Image (tube, helix red, strand yellow):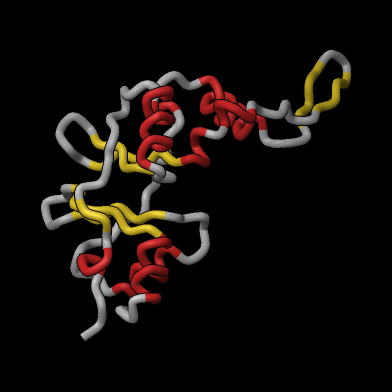
Length: 154
């Protein structure tokens, strides 16, 4: 019988709320030695994921996109909307301002093979695991899959 997500996922993951201060989220990641965590609404529904990648904007800042001026008009050579989004993340004070809202998820019953496919590419490093009611019951990371492979579960 193929291994399932429930066999290897981390149960009861550490979570934060959208209004959690960025400093607190950073401290949680460091304290628990994790690279990301689900963001839950006040009703317990998944609304996003906050990760090291999202938080690194706080430290790295934002590069101003190249532009040229012609007759007192500014013409950006890169998409100014992207710059605006990056600036918002860098200046954010709460998790909601930096979190990723388009989140891939999985279920406990999914096979490890299917979950591995979802984690392959696209920069996805973790999958929140949702039960039938949409409640977060675990998280599956690339590391969980590697450990399962080493244990011969895959």
